[in-house]
Amino acid sequence: MDKTPRLLLALDILAAAGMAGTIGLVFLYAPIERVMGAVQKVFYFHVASAWVGMLSFLVAAIVGVLYLLRREPILDIAGHAAVEIGLVFSIIAVLAGMTWARPVWNTWWTWDPRLTTAAIMVLVYAAYLTLRGGIDDPERQARFSAVYAIVGAVSVPLTFFSIRLFRTIHPVLFGGDTSANMSDFSTDPRMVVTFFVSLAAFSILFVALYWHRIRLGQLASRVEELKSSRED
Amino acid sequence: MGTFTRTLLAVAWKDLAAEWRSREILSATLVFSILVIFIYNFALDLEVTLQSDLAAGILWVTFVFAGTLGLNRSMSMEKDRGGLDGLLLAPVDRSAIFFGKMTANLVIMLVVAIVVVPVFSLLYTINLILPGVILVILLGSVGYTAVGTLLAAMAVQARTRDMLLPILLFPVALPLLVAAVKATAAFLSPSVTNSAVPWLNLLIAYDVIFLVIAWLVFDFVVEE
Image 1 (cartoon, chains in turn green, red):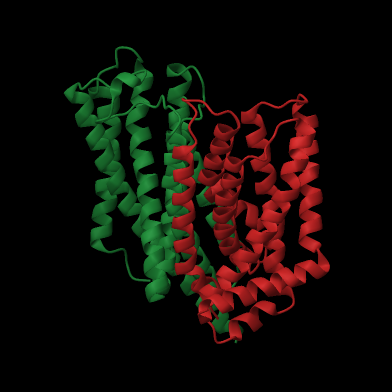
Image 2 (cartoon, rainbow over the protein chains, first blue to last red):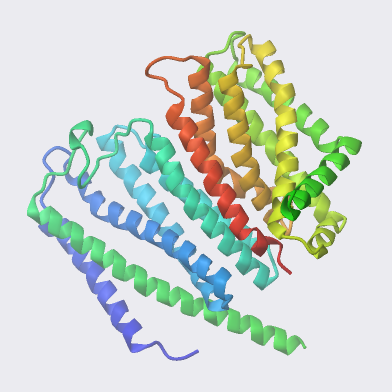
């Protein structure tokens, strides 16, 4: 395996700085929300994690389509990597959301479209990993994973729409009819700045992590190759 | 009749003839469905006369659970006895094989429904034999067998196959389940605020989307 590319190193530093900056902004710069109090600060991490979770899911599906068309093993590694990262960030988003919901909605959980969709997304990711784990042949594993990533990515928006046909109490951040919601986030400019810094930092973190995870995947398949060549 | 249709019908006919002789899937699925209905009665301590929402939910959970039995069996039967290899060796369009297997699964699911729906109506004193409910069962079964046949084809080729299908199928079948339950409930207690139309639209959308996806990707599932 080659040495860590300079660009990746730069991304690592940028991601670390971005996360440190986000934490600084969230706790020192962003104001305390009037109604919800300090717990509203969870939102900066919650939304950014949810965004990374969804982004990974989308990436996994796109990479899945590409794999089925081109059959390059790297695309399978990229799909697996996206799902693993997406799973972690989706779980973070769900747990952070629950932490916020307990004082604000007075319940850990509601069967709201976004909450339910996020939870189902976690289950689809988990099913994807179970599927991978159940197949030994690497080529078949790659093909089935790609197919399931596509099926999952198509069903998740449908899940969202199906549950949205009920009424929702989840706050709509931008656009949308805020009067229907229990709370809408006031547009204090410091909050907006913190929010977008957090979003950017998490996005950079995603790219850096994704790159590392793909390299790790390549290394793992190299190890497999070496092992099987020694057995021969 | 084109080659595609003939292949499709031949595959479906083969499955249904095998099923007619053994009645393996039908008997198991029927017994299982009735069991689920009974378990619900005791687990939830249900009244003799059931509310429409609850009836719709129980009916669909019964179908969804029972459906996985048949879907798994229909594919593992092919895998165990090398039937799938034989099918794939045939110089025919593979999507015709998919739609043939799916048609057979669909017919079996509908036969199960023909028995389960009257039994359910009888046990819970609620008339489910309505044109609207039948339409929902038809639409729901199409979508469920489309995605189920595709995922079962993958599940049976895995080491962990018996456990795998429900795990793969349930999270992606959730929108179908939601729409089917809501549409059924709307037909059972029609009112202005309780329209079945948006749910029927969602069911149709689900059916179309997953029929297309299955048609596009089935080749990759049975390759080699």
